[in-house]
Image 1: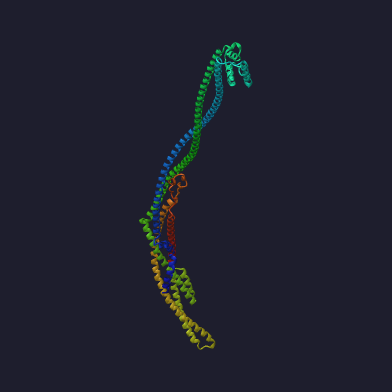
Image 2: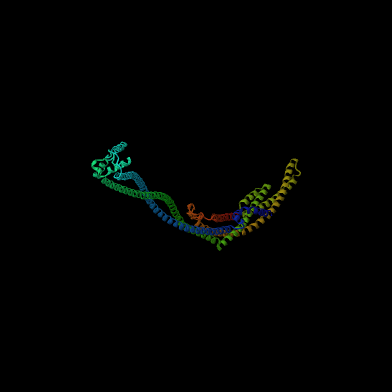
Length: 613
Protein backbone atom coordinates (compact mmCIF):
# COMPACT_ATOMS: atom_id res chain seq x y z
CA UNK A 1 0.00 0.00 0.00
CA UNK A 2 2.99 2.24 0.58
CA UNK A 3 3.65 2.30 -3.18
CA UNK A 4 0.06 3.45 -3.80
CA UNK A 5 0.46 6.20 -1.25
CA UNK A 6 3.67 7.27 -2.96
CA UNK A 7 1.82 7.28 -6.31
CA UNK A 8 -0.87 9.62 -4.91
CA UNK A 9 1.65 11.97 -3.29
CA UNK A 10 3.87 12.12 -6.35
CA UNK A 11 0.86 12.73 -8.60
CA UNK A 12 0.07 15.95 -6.74
CA UNK A 13 3.67 17.14 -7.09
CA UNK A 14 3.94 16.07 -10.72
CA UNK A 15 0.74 17.87 -11.68
CA UNK A 16 2.41 21.24 -10.92
CA UNK A 17 5.24 20.48 -13.35
CA UNK A 18 3.39 18.85 -16.20
CA UNK A 19 0.56 21.39 -16.20
CA UNK A 20 2.86 24.45 -16.25
CA UNK A 21 2.16 25.03 -19.93
CA UNK A 22 -1.56 24.90 -19.18
CA UNK A 23 -1.13 27.61 -16.59
CA UNK A 24 0.44 29.79 -19.30
CA UNK A 25 -2.24 28.79 -21.78
CA UNK A 26 -5.06 29.42 -19.32
CA UNK A 27 -3.64 32.60 -17.81
CA UNK A 28 -5.65 34.81 -20.19
CA UNK A 29 -8.66 32.57 -19.70
CA UNK A 30 -8.67 33.42 -16.04
CA UNK A 31 -8.80 37.14 -16.84
CA UNK A 32 -12.31 38.51 -17.36
CA UNK A 33 -13.53 34.94 -17.58
CA UNK A 34 -12.70 34.85 -21.31
CA UNK A 35 -10.56 32.42 -23.23
CA UNK A 36 -7.64 33.81 -25.27
CA UNK A 37 -9.59 33.31 -28.47
CA UNK A 38 -12.63 35.12 -27.08
CA UNK A 39 -10.40 37.89 -25.78
CA UNK A 40 -8.92 38.29 -29.26
CA UNK A 41 -12.38 38.34 -30.82
CA UNK A 42 -13.62 40.83 -28.21
CA UNK A 43 -10.61 43.05 -28.86
CA UNK A 44 -11.19 42.88 -32.61
CA UNK A 45 -14.86 43.75 -32.14
CA UNK A 46 -13.84 46.77 -30.02
CA UNK A 47 -11.43 47.73 -32.80
CA UNK A 48 -14.25 47.40 -35.32
CA UNK A 49 -16.49 49.71 -33.27
CA UNK A 50 -13.69 52.27 -32.86
CA UNK A 51 -12.85 52.17 -36.56
CA UNK A 52 -16.49 52.83 -37.44
CA UNK A 53 -16.52 55.71 -34.95
CA UNK A 54 -13.28 57.10 -36.45
CA UNK A 55 -14.77 56.80 -39.94
CA UNK A 56 -17.83 58.78 -38.80
CA UNK A 57 -15.57 61.46 -37.27
CA UNK A 58 -13.55 61.64 -40.50
CA UNK A 59 -16.74 62.07 -42.51
CA UNK A 60 -17.98 64.84 -40.20
CA UNK A 61 -14.62 66.63 -40.37
CA UNK A 62 -14.51 66.24 -44.16
CA UNK A 63 -17.97 67.79 -44.46
CA UNK A 64 -16.90 70.70 -42.23
CA UNK A 65 -13.68 71.22 -44.18
CA UNK A 66 -15.50 70.92 -47.50
CA UNK A 67 -18.05 73.51 -46.37
CA UNK A 68 -15.23 75.72 -45.11
CA UNK A 69 -13.37 75.36 -48.41
CA UNK A 70 -16.42 76.21 -50.51
CA UNK A 71 -17.43 79.12 -48.29
CA UNK A 72 -13.96 80.66 -48.07
CA UNK A 73 -13.19 80.03 -51.72
CA UNK A 74 -16.33 81.91 -52.77
CA UNK A 75 -15.75 84.71 -50.26
CA UNK A 76 -12.11 85.11 -51.17
CA UNK A 77 -12.80 84.96 -54.91
CA UNK A 78 -15.38 87.72 -54.46
CA UNK A 79 -12.94 89.64 -52.25
CA UNK A 80 -10.16 89.32 -54.85
CA UNK A 81 -12.46 90.40 -57.68
CA UNK A 82 -13.79 93.33 -55.64
CA UNK A 83 -10.26 94.20 -54.56
CA UNK A 84 -8.89 94.11 -58.11
CA UNK A 85 -11.81 96.24 -59.34
CA UNK A 86 -11.22 98.65 -56.49
CA UNK A 87 -7.52 98.70 -57.40
CA UNK A 88 -8.39 99.58 -61.00
CA UNK A 89 -10.73 102.30 -59.76
CA UNK A 90 -8.03 103.59 -57.43
CA UNK A 91 -5.42 103.56 -60.18
CA UNK A 92 -7.82 105.49 -62.40
CA UNK A 93 -8.57 107.88 -59.53
CA UNK A 94 -4.85 108.26 -58.81
CA UNK A 95 -4.12 108.94 -62.47
CA UNK A 96 -7.00 111.39 -62.62
CA UNK A 97 -6.00 112.88 -59.27
CA UNK A 98 -2.40 113.28 -60.40
CA UNK A 99 -3.60 115.06 -63.54
CA UNK A 100 -5.97 117.16 -61.43
CA UNK A 101 -3.16 118.12 -59.08
CA UNK A 102 -1.04 119.15 -62.03
CA UNK A 103 -3.94 121.04 -63.55
CA UNK A 104 -4.84 122.68 -60.23
CA UNK A 105 -1.25 123.70 -59.63
CA UNK A 106 -1.17 125.23 -63.11
CA UNK A 107 -4.52 126.87 -62.48
CA UNK A 108 -3.33 128.14 -59.11
CA UNK A 109 -0.17 129.51 -60.66
CA UNK A 110 -2.18 131.18 -63.43
CA UNK A 111 -4.64 132.57 -60.89
CA UNK A 112 -1.80 133.89 -58.76
CA UNK A 113 -0.13 135.43 -61.82
CA UNK A 114 -3.46 136.89 -62.95
CA UNK A 115 -4.11 138.20 -59.45
CA UNK A 116 -0.71 139.77 -59.33
CA UNK A 117 -1.29 141.25 -62.81
CA UNK A 118 -4.70 142.59 -61.80
CA UNK A 119 -3.32 144.01 -58.58
CA UNK A 120 -0.45 145.58 -60.52
CA UNK A 121 -2.85 146.90 -63.15
CA UNK A 122 -5.15 148.30 -60.46
CA UNK A 123 -2.23 149.84 -58.70
CA UNK A 124 -0.97 151.33 -61.95
CA UNK A 125 -4.44 152.54 -62.95
CA UNK A 126 -4.94 154.01 -59.49
CA UNK A 127 -1.59 155.74 -59.72
CA UNK A 128 -2.38 157.10 -63.18
CA UNK A 129 -5.86 158.14 -62.08
CA UNK A 130 -4.43 159.87 -59.07
CA UNK A 131 -1.90 161.63 -61.28
CA UNK A 132 -4.52 162.51 -63.89
CA UNK A 133 -6.86 163.75 -61.22
CA UNK A 134 -4.14 165.83 -59.67
CA UNK A 135 -3.23 167.25 -63.07
CA UNK A 136 -6.89 167.92 -63.80
CA UNK A 137 -7.40 169.58 -60.48
CA UNK A 138 -4.37 171.76 -61.14
CA UNK A 139 -5.61 172.48 -64.63
CA UNK A 140 -9.14 173.07 -63.42
CA UNK A 141 -7.98 175.43 -60.74
CA UNK A 142 -5.86 177.42 -63.20
CA UNK A 143 -8.57 177.27 -65.82
CA UNK A 144 -11.14 178.56 -63.39
CA UNK A 145 -8.76 181.30 -62.34
CA UNK A 146 -8.11 182.12 -65.99
CA UNK A 147 -11.80 182.19 -66.77
CA UNK A 148 -12.45 184.35 -63.77
CA UNK A 149 -9.54 186.58 -64.80
CA UNK A 150 -10.94 186.90 -68.31
CA UNK A 151 -14.34 187.61 -66.93
CA UNK A 152 -12.87 190.22 -64.65
CA UNK A 153 -10.83 191.68 -67.51
CA UNK A 154 -13.89 191.79 -69.68
CA UNK A 155 -15.80 193.53 -66.94
CA UNK A 156 -12.95 195.98 -66.53
CA UNK A 157 -12.81 196.55 -70.29
CA UNK A 158 -16.51 196.96 -70.34
CA UNK A 159 -16.32 199.53 -67.56
CA UNK A 160 -13.29 201.21 -69.05
CA UNK A 161 -15.22 202.07 -72.13
CA UNK A 162 -17.80 204.01 -70.07
CA UNK A 163 -16.13 205.11 -66.81
CA UNK A 164 -13.30 207.54 -65.85
CA UNK A 165 -9.90 206.61 -66.81
CA UNK A 166 -6.92 206.47 -64.50
CA UNK A 167 -4.08 208.67 -65.03
CA UNK A 168 -1.10 207.21 -66.73
CA UNK A 169 0.98 207.77 -63.62
CA UNK A 170 -1.44 205.55 -61.59
CA UNK A 171 -1.52 202.90 -64.27
CA UNK A 172 2.24 202.78 -64.39
CA UNK A 173 2.38 202.48 -60.66
CA UNK A 174 -0.06 199.57 -60.70
CA UNK A 175 1.90 197.85 -63.40
CA UNK A 176 5.16 198.37 -61.60
CA UNK A 177 3.62 197.03 -58.44
CA UNK A 178 2.29 193.98 -60.25
CA UNK A 179 5.62 193.22 -61.85
CA UNK A 180 7.47 193.59 -58.58
CA UNK A 181 5.23 190.88 -57.00
CA UNK A 182 7.15 188.20 -58.90
CA UNK A 183 4.81 187.57 -61.76
CA UNK A 184 7.26 188.67 -64.44
CA UNK A 185 8.44 186.03 -66.88
CA UNK A 186 5.03 184.38 -67.41
CA UNK A 187 3.86 184.50 -70.99
CA UNK A 188 4.89 187.43 -73.09
CA UNK A 189 5.34 189.74 -70.07
CA UNK A 190 2.98 192.14 -71.77
CA UNK A 191 2.20 193.82 -68.43
CA UNK A 192 5.59 195.38 -68.13
CA UNK A 193 3.68 198.62 -68.40
CA UNK A 194 0.59 199.46 -66.41
CA UNK A 195 -2.60 197.97 -67.79
CA UNK A 196 -5.05 200.21 -69.46
CA UNK A 197 -7.88 198.89 -67.32
CA UNK A 198 -7.52 199.43 -63.69
CA UNK A 199 -9.60 197.38 -61.22
CA UNK A 200 -7.99 193.89 -61.90
CA UNK A 201 -6.24 192.16 -59.08
CA UNK A 202 -2.73 190.94 -59.41
CA UNK A 203 -3.94 187.33 -59.64
CA UNK A 204 -6.45 188.28 -62.31
CA UNK A 205 -3.79 190.12 -64.22
CA UNK A 206 -1.48 187.16 -63.89
CA UNK A 207 -4.21 184.82 -65.03
CA UNK A 208 -4.97 187.10 -67.90
CA UNK A 209 -1.30 187.05 -68.81
CA UNK A 210 -1.28 183.24 -68.82
CA UNK A 211 -4.40 183.14 -70.94
CA UNK A 212 -2.90 185.46 -73.49
CA UNK A 213 0.37 183.54 -73.43
CA UNK A 214 -1.45 180.28 -74.05
CA UNK A 215 -3.17 181.59 -77.16
CA UNK A 216 -2.05 179.91 -80.29
CA UNK A 217 -2.95 182.96 -82.41
CA UNK A 218 0.14 185.18 -82.53
CA UNK A 219 -1.82 188.10 -83.94
CA UNK A 220 -4.33 187.91 -81.15
CA UNK A 221 -1.62 187.61 -78.61
CA UNK A 222 0.13 190.64 -80.09
CA UNK A 223 -3.01 192.71 -80.13
CA UNK A 224 -3.91 191.89 -76.55
CA UNK A 225 -0.36 192.46 -75.44
CA UNK A 226 -0.15 195.76 -77.23
CA UNK A 227 -3.48 196.73 -75.83
CA UNK A 228 -2.45 196.04 -72.28
CA UNK A 229 0.90 197.73 -72.91
CA UNK A 230 -1.07 200.77 -73.94
CA UNK A 231 0.56 201.00 -77.30
CA UNK A 232 -0.99 203.99 -79.03
CA UNK A 233 -1.96 202.21 -82.17
CA UNK A 234 -4.11 199.75 -80.14
CA UNK A 235 -5.78 202.21 -77.78
CA UNK A 236 -8.75 202.64 -80.09
CA UNK A 237 -9.13 198.83 -80.53
CA UNK A 238 -10.74 198.00 -77.14
CA UNK A 239 -13.80 196.73 -78.89
CA UNK A 240 -11.79 194.27 -80.90
CA UNK A 241 -9.83 193.29 -77.80
CA UNK A 242 -13.08 192.80 -75.98
CA UNK A 243 -14.22 190.49 -78.73
CA UNK A 244 -10.97 188.58 -78.68
CA UNK A 245 -11.14 188.12 -74.94
CA UNK A 246 -14.76 187.00 -75.19
CA UNK A 247 -13.65 184.46 -77.70
CA UNK A 248 -10.86 183.38 -75.40
CA UNK A 249 -13.34 183.18 -72.54
CA UNK A 250 -15.66 181.04 -74.58
CA UNK A 251 -12.76 178.89 -75.70
CA UNK A 252 -11.40 178.50 -72.18
CA UNK A 253 -14.84 177.88 -70.77
CA UNK A 254 -15.39 175.26 -73.41
CA UNK A 255 -11.99 173.71 -72.78
CA UNK A 256 -12.67 173.69 -69.05
CA UNK A 257 -16.02 172.10 -69.59
CA UNK A 258 -14.51 169.56 -71.94
CA UNK A 259 -11.76 168.85 -69.44
CA UNK A 260 -14.32 168.49 -66.67
CA UNK A 261 -16.38 166.16 -68.79
CA UNK A 262 -13.30 164.13 -69.63
CA UNK A 263 -12.33 164.10 -65.97
CA UNK A 264 -15.78 162.96 -65.03
CA UNK A 265 -15.61 160.31 -67.72
CA UNK A 266 -12.12 159.31 -66.64
CA UNK A 267 -13.26 159.14 -63.01
CA UNK A 268 -16.24 157.06 -64.05
CA UNK A 269 -14.05 154.84 -66.21
CA UNK A 270 -11.58 154.50 -63.40
CA UNK A 271 -14.39 153.69 -61.02
CA UNK A 272 -15.60 151.02 -63.39
CA UNK A 273 -12.06 149.83 -63.98
CA UNK A 274 -11.34 149.71 -60.29
CA UNK A 275 -14.61 147.90 -59.60
CA UNK A 276 -13.83 145.48 -62.40
CA UNK A 277 -10.26 144.93 -61.23
CA UNK A 278 -11.34 144.61 -57.64
CA UNK A 279 -13.95 142.12 -58.76
CA UNK A 280 -11.30 140.32 -60.79
CA UNK A 281 -8.92 140.44 -57.84
CA UNK A 282 -11.63 139.14 -55.52
CA UNK A 283 -12.50 136.49 -58.05
CA UNK A 284 -8.81 135.66 -58.34
CA UNK A 285 -8.45 135.45 -54.59
CA UNK A 286 -11.57 133.32 -54.44
CA UNK A 287 -10.22 131.18 -57.25
CA UNK A 288 -6.87 130.86 -55.47
CA UNK A 289 -8.59 129.99 -52.20
CA UNK A 290 -10.92 127.53 -53.86
CA UNK A 291 -8.14 126.09 -55.98
CA UNK A 292 -5.87 125.85 -52.93
CA UNK A 293 -8.62 124.05 -51.01
CA UNK A 294 -9.38 121.85 -54.00
CA UNK A 295 -5.68 121.14 -54.48
CA UNK A 296 -5.34 120.26 -50.80
CA UNK A 297 -8.41 118.03 -50.98
CA UNK A 298 -7.18 116.47 -54.22
CA UNK A 299 -3.72 115.92 -52.72
CA UNK A 300 -5.29 114.39 -49.63
CA UNK A 301 -7.52 112.17 -51.73
CA UNK A 302 -4.51 111.25 -53.86
CA UNK A 303 -2.54 110.29 -50.75
CA UNK A 304 -5.57 108.43 -49.38
CA UNK A 305 -6.06 106.65 -52.71
CA UNK A 306 -2.39 105.66 -52.82
CA UNK A 307 -2.55 104.37 -49.26
CA UNK A 308 -5.83 102.63 -50.07
CA UNK A 309 -4.23 101.15 -53.20
CA UNK A 310 -1.27 99.90 -51.17
CA UNK A 311 -3.56 98.43 -48.51
CA UNK A 312 -5.90 96.95 -51.12
CA UNK A 313 -2.96 95.49 -53.04
CA UNK A 314 -1.68 93.97 -49.82
CA UNK A 315 -5.14 92.58 -49.04
CA UNK A 316 -5.56 91.20 -52.56
CA UNK A 317 -2.09 89.61 -52.41
CA UNK A 318 -2.95 88.14 -49.01
CA UNK A 319 -6.29 86.90 -50.35
CA UNK A 320 -4.54 85.36 -53.37
CA UNK A 321 -1.99 83.70 -51.09
CA UNK A 322 -4.84 82.46 -48.92
CA UNK A 323 -6.69 81.22 -52.01
CA UNK A 324 -3.57 79.46 -53.30
CA UNK A 325 -3.06 77.82 -49.93
CA UNK A 326 -6.78 77.12 -49.65
CA UNK A 327 -6.86 75.57 -53.12
CA UNK A 328 -3.87 73.40 -52.27
CA UNK A 329 -5.26 72.51 -48.87
CA UNK A 330 -8.78 71.83 -50.09
CA UNK A 331 -7.53 69.80 -53.04
CA UNK A 332 -5.57 67.67 -50.61
CA UNK A 333 -8.62 67.40 -48.33
CA UNK A 334 -10.47 65.39 -50.99
CA UNK A 335 -7.38 63.33 -51.69
CA UNK A 336 -6.65 62.77 -48.03
CA UNK A 337 -10.24 61.91 -47.21
CA UNK A 338 -10.35 59.43 -50.08
CA UNK A 339 -7.05 57.94 -48.91
CA UNK A 340 -8.19 57.84 -45.29
CA UNK A 341 -11.54 56.34 -46.29
CA UNK A 342 -9.80 53.63 -48.31
CA UNK A 343 -7.37 52.92 -45.48
CA UNK A 344 -10.22 52.87 -42.98
CA UNK A 345 -12.22 50.58 -45.24
CA UNK A 346 -9.20 48.30 -45.72
CA UNK A 347 -8.58 48.31 -41.98
CA UNK A 348 -12.23 47.50 -41.28
CA UNK A 349 -12.08 44.74 -43.89
CA UNK A 350 -8.94 43.34 -42.29
CA UNK A 351 -10.52 43.37 -38.84
CA UNK A 352 -13.85 42.00 -40.10
CA UNK A 353 -12.12 39.24 -42.08
CA UNK A 354 -10.04 38.34 -39.03
CA UNK A 355 -13.18 38.17 -36.88
CA UNK A 356 -14.80 35.96 -39.53
CA UNK A 357 -11.73 33.71 -39.53
CA UNK A 358 -11.68 33.39 -35.75
CA UNK A 359 -15.45 32.97 -35.40
CA UNK A 360 -15.76 30.40 -38.18
CA UNK A 361 -17.22 27.04 -37.22
CA UNK A 362 -13.91 25.26 -37.86
CA UNK A 363 -12.01 27.74 -35.70
CA UNK A 364 -14.49 27.45 -32.83
CA UNK A 365 -14.47 23.65 -33.06
CA UNK A 366 -10.68 23.45 -33.17
CA UNK A 367 -10.27 25.91 -30.33
CA UNK A 368 -12.75 24.04 -28.15
CA UNK A 369 -11.16 20.68 -28.92
CA UNK A 370 -7.66 22.02 -28.36
CA UNK A 371 -8.59 23.36 -24.96
CA UNK A 372 -10.33 20.10 -24.00
CA UNK A 373 -7.40 18.07 -25.31
CA UNK A 374 -4.97 20.23 -23.42
CA UNK A 375 -6.91 19.70 -20.22
CA UNK A 376 -7.24 15.98 -20.84
CA UNK A 377 -3.59 15.67 -21.81
CA UNK A 378 -2.68 17.41 -18.61
CA UNK A 379 -4.51 14.73 -16.65
CA UNK A 380 -2.77 12.00 -18.63
CA UNK A 381 0.55 13.67 -18.11
CA UNK A 382 -0.20 13.88 -14.41
CA UNK A 383 -0.84 10.14 -14.38
CA UNK A 384 2.35 9.48 -16.30
CA UNK A 385 4.24 11.69 -13.93
CA UNK A 386 2.63 9.89 -11.03
CA UNK A 387 3.97 6.58 -12.31
CA UNK A 388 7.42 8.09 -12.55
CA UNK A 389 7.14 9.44 -9.03
CA UNK A 390 5.87 6.09 -7.79
CA UNK A 391 8.82 4.29 -9.35
CA UNK A 392 11.20 6.75 -7.77
CA UNK A 393 9.54 6.29 -4.37
CA UNK A 394 9.75 2.51 -4.70
CA UNK A 395 13.44 2.77 -5.50
CA UNK A 396 13.93 4.91 -2.40
CA UNK A 397 12.21 2.27 -0.25
CA UNK A 398 14.43 -0.44 -1.73
CA UNK A 399 17.51 1.65 -1.07
CA UNK A 400 16.51 2.18 2.56
CA UNK A 401 15.86 -1.55 2.97
CA UNK A 402 19.24 -2.32 1.42
CA UNK A 403 20.95 -0.01 3.90
CA UNK A 404 19.15 -1.52 6.85
CA UNK A 405 19.88 -5.06 5.71
CA UNK A 406 23.31 -4.17 4.43
CA UNK A 407 22.18 -5.99 1.28
CA UNK A 408 24.04 -5.40 -1.94
CA UNK A 409 21.30 -7.05 -4.03
CA UNK A 410 18.65 -4.70 -2.58
CA UNK A 411 20.91 -1.75 -3.32
CA UNK A 412 21.36 -2.93 -6.91
CA UNK A 413 17.62 -3.42 -7.20
CA UNK A 414 17.02 0.14 -5.97
CA UNK A 415 19.37 1.48 -8.67
CA UNK A 416 17.61 -0.61 -11.29
CA UNK A 417 14.23 0.69 -10.09
CA UNK A 418 15.32 4.27 -10.72
CA UNK A 419 16.77 3.53 -14.13
CA UNK A 420 14.75 0.67 -15.60
CA UNK A 421 11.13 0.16 -16.37
CA UNK A 422 8.84 -1.71 -13.98
CA UNK A 423 9.06 -4.88 -16.08
CA UNK A 424 12.76 -5.21 -15.35
CA UNK A 425 12.27 -4.14 -11.75
CA UNK A 426 9.59 -6.75 -11.31
CA UNK A 427 11.86 -9.48 -12.65
CA UNK A 428 14.70 -8.32 -10.47
CA UNK A 429 12.42 -8.14 -7.44
CA UNK A 430 11.15 -11.67 -8.06
CA UNK A 431 14.71 -12.90 -8.48
CA UNK A 432 15.74 -11.11 -5.33
CA UNK A 433 12.78 -12.53 -3.43
CA UNK A 434 13.79 -16.00 -4.56
CA UNK A 435 17.32 -15.38 -3.37
CA UNK A 436 16.04 -13.92 -0.12
CA UNK A 437 13.87 -16.98 0.39
CA UNK A 438 16.89 -19.16 -0.30
CA UNK A 439 18.93 -17.07 2.07
CA UNK A 440 16.18 -17.46 4.65
CA UNK A 441 16.29 -21.23 4.19
CA UNK A 442 20.05 -21.15 4.34
CA UNK A 443 19.95 -19.03 7.46
CA UNK A 444 17.46 -21.41 9.04
CA UNK A 445 19.77 -24.25 8.18
CA UNK A 446 22.62 -22.20 9.52
CA UNK A 447 20.65 -21.57 12.68
CA UNK A 448 19.93 -25.23 13.07
CA UNK A 449 23.58 -25.99 12.40
CA UNK A 450 24.62 -23.39 14.91
CA UNK A 451 22.27 -24.80 17.49
CA UNK A 452 23.61 -28.21 16.83
CA UNK A 453 27.14 -26.90 17.04
CA UNK A 454 26.22 -25.03 20.16
CA UNK A 455 24.97 -28.19 21.71
CA UNK A 456 28.12 -29.97 20.56
CA UNK A 457 30.34 -27.34 21.93
CA UNK A 458 28.34 -26.80 25.06
CA UNK A 459 30.61 -29.09 26.78
CA UNK A 460 33.79 -27.68 25.31
CA UNK A 461 36.26 -25.66 27.19
CA UNK A 462 35.86 -22.13 28.46
CA UNK A 463 37.87 -20.75 25.59
CA UNK A 464 34.88 -21.55 23.39
CA UNK A 465 32.56 -19.30 25.45
CA UNK A 466 33.32 -16.19 23.43
CA UNK A 467 32.60 -17.99 20.20
CA UNK A 468 29.41 -19.23 21.73
CA UNK A 469 28.43 -15.75 22.68
CA UNK A 470 29.18 -14.53 19.20
CA UNK A 471 27.21 -17.28 17.67
CA UNK A 472 24.28 -16.56 19.93
CA UNK A 473 24.42 -12.93 18.99
CA UNK A 474 24.63 -13.84 15.34
CA UNK A 475 21.73 -16.20 15.75
CA UNK A 476 19.67 -13.42 17.36
CA UNK A 477 20.59 -11.05 14.56
CA UNK A 478 19.80 -13.58 11.93
CA UNK A 479 16.54 -14.36 13.61
CA UNK A 480 15.70 -10.65 13.68
CA UNK A 481 16.80 -10.22 10.09
CA UNK A 482 14.74 -13.18 9.01
CA UNK A 483 11.71 -11.77 10.75
CA UNK A 484 12.28 -8.35 9.20
CA UNK A 485 12.94 -9.82 5.81
CA UNK A 486 9.78 -11.84 6.04
CA UNK A 487 7.87 -8.64 6.78
CA UNK A 488 9.63 -6.72 4.01
CA UNK A 489 9.12 -9.57 1.57
CA UNK A 490 5.45 -9.52 2.42
CA UNK A 491 5.33 -5.76 2.03
CA UNK A 492 7.27 -5.87 -1.22
CA UNK A 493 5.02 -8.58 -2.53
CA UNK A 494 2.02 -6.37 -1.78
CA UNK A 495 3.69 -3.33 -3.33
CA UNK A 496 4.79 -5.32 -6.35
CA UNK A 497 1.23 -6.51 -6.76
CA UNK A 498 0.00 -2.95 -6.50
CA UNK A 499 2.69 -1.81 -8.90
CA UNK A 500 1.69 -4.48 -11.36
CA UNK A 501 -1.90 -3.27 -11.14
CA UNK A 502 -0.68 0.28 -11.69
CA UNK A 503 1.49 -0.87 -14.58
CA UNK A 504 -1.48 -2.48 -16.23
CA UNK A 505 -3.54 0.64 -15.74
CA UNK A 506 -0.56 2.71 -16.91
CA UNK A 507 -0.45 0.71 -20.12
CA UNK A 508 -4.10 1.37 -20.72
CA UNK A 509 -3.62 5.04 -19.85
CA UNK A 510 -0.59 5.18 -22.12
CA UNK A 511 -2.65 4.05 -25.05
CA UNK A 512 -5.33 6.60 -24.24
CA UNK A 513 -2.67 9.28 -23.73
CA UNK A 514 -1.10 8.51 -27.06
CA UNK A 515 -4.47 8.84 -28.77
CA UNK A 516 -5.13 12.12 -27.01
CA UNK A 517 -1.61 13.26 -27.86
CA UNK A 518 -2.12 12.65 -31.55
CA UNK A 519 -5.48 14.40 -31.44
CA UNK A 520 -3.97 17.30 -29.51
CA UNK A 521 -1.20 17.69 -32.09
CA UNK A 522 -3.71 17.70 -34.92
CA UNK A 523 -5.95 20.23 -33.20
CA UNK A 524 -2.98 22.39 -32.17
CA UNK A 525 -1.74 22.42 -35.75
CA UNK A 526 -5.22 23.35 -36.96
CA UNK A 527 -5.49 26.11 -34.36
CA UNK A 528 -2.10 27.52 -35.36
CA UNK A 529 -3.14 27.47 -39.01
CA UNK A 530 -6.31 29.45 -38.24
CA UNK A 531 -4.47 31.86 -35.94
CA UNK A 532 -1.73 32.41 -38.51
CA UNK A 533 -4.38 33.02 -41.14
CA UNK A 534 -5.96 35.62 -38.87
CA UNK A 535 -2.53 37.10 -38.08
CA UNK A 536 -1.58 37.25 -41.75
CA UNK A 537 -4.87 38.97 -42.59
CA UNK A 538 -4.22 41.69 -40.01
CA UNK A 539 -0.60 42.03 -41.09
CA UNK A 540 -1.71 42.47 -44.70
CA UNK A 541 -3.06 45.83 -43.58
CA UNK A 542 -1.10 46.90 -40.52
CA UNK A 543 2.22 45.61 -41.79
CA UNK A 544 2.01 47.77 -44.94
CA UNK A 545 0.15 50.76 -43.49
CA UNK A 546 1.45 54.04 -44.88
CA UNK A 547 0.08 56.88 -42.80
CA UNK A 548 -1.23 59.84 -44.80
CA UNK A 549 0.17 63.21 -43.83
CA UNK A 550 -2.53 65.70 -42.96
CA UNK A 551 -2.35 68.82 -45.10
CA UNK A 552 -4.99 70.67 -43.11
CA UNK A 553 -2.94 71.98 -40.23
CA UNK A 554 -5.00 75.08 -39.52
CA UNK A 555 -1.92 77.26 -39.30
CA UNK A 556 -2.73 79.34 -42.43
CA UNK A 557 -5.65 81.42 -41.27
CA UNK A 558 -6.61 84.84 -42.53
CA UNK A 559 -6.36 87.02 -39.42
CA UNK A 560 -7.75 89.97 -41.43
CA UNK A 561 -10.99 88.17 -42.08
CA UNK A 562 -13.84 87.11 -39.86
CA UNK A 563 -13.47 84.07 -37.58
CA UNK A 564 -15.35 81.95 -40.12
CA UNK A 565 -12.27 82.13 -42.35
CA UNK A 566 -10.37 80.05 -39.83
CA UNK A 567 -10.20 76.35 -40.63
CA UNK A 568 -12.78 74.47 -38.50
CA UNK A 569 -10.21 71.82 -37.61
CA UNK A 570 -8.18 69.08 -39.20
CA UNK A 571 -8.18 65.35 -39.60
CA UNK A 572 -6.73 63.52 -36.66
CA UNK A 573 -3.38 61.98 -37.36
CA UNK A 574 -4.12 58.68 -39.04
CA UNK A 575 -2.57 55.79 -37.19
CA UNK A 576 -3.34 52.14 -36.87
CA UNK A 577 -5.94 51.31 -34.28
CA UNK A 578 -4.37 51.37 -30.85
CA UNK A 579 -5.71 47.89 -30.18
CA UNK A 580 -4.23 46.44 -33.37
CA UNK A 581 -0.94 45.77 -31.64
CA UNK A 582 -2.81 44.12 -28.80
CA UNK A 583 -4.82 41.95 -31.16
CA UNK A 584 -1.74 40.93 -33.13
CA UNK A 585 0.12 40.44 -29.88
CA UNK A 586 -2.61 38.21 -28.45
CA UNK A 587 -2.81 36.20 -31.65
CA UNK A 588 0.98 35.87 -31.78
CA UNK A 589 1.04 34.97 -28.10
CA UNK A 590 -1.74 32.41 -28.56
CA UNK A 591 0.14 30.93 -31.54
CA UNK A 592 3.34 30.77 -29.53
CA UNK A 593 1.61 29.22 -26.53
CA UNK A 594 -0.17 26.71 -28.74
CA UNK A 595 3.15 25.81 -30.38
CA UNK A 596 4.81 25.61 -26.97
CA UNK A 597 1.96 23.43 -25.76
CA UNK A 598 2.49 21.25 -28.81
CA UNK A 599 6.25 20.97 -28.19
CA UNK A 600 5.69 20.26 -24.51
CA UNK A 601 3.08 17.70 -25.42
CA UNK A 602 5.60 16.06 -27.77
CA UNK A 603 8.27 16.06 -25.05
CA UNK A 604 5.87 14.73 -22.44
CA UNK A 605 4.69 12.06 -24.87
CA UNK A 606 8.29 11.04 -25.50
CA UNK A 607 9.06 11.05 -21.78
CA UNK A 608 5.88 9.15 -20.99
CA UNK A 609 6.62 6.56 -23.67
CA UNK A 610 10.21 6.19 -22.48
CA UNK A 611 9.12 5.83 -18.87
CA UNK A 612 6.41 3.39 -19.82
CA UNK A 613 8.88 1.26 -21.72
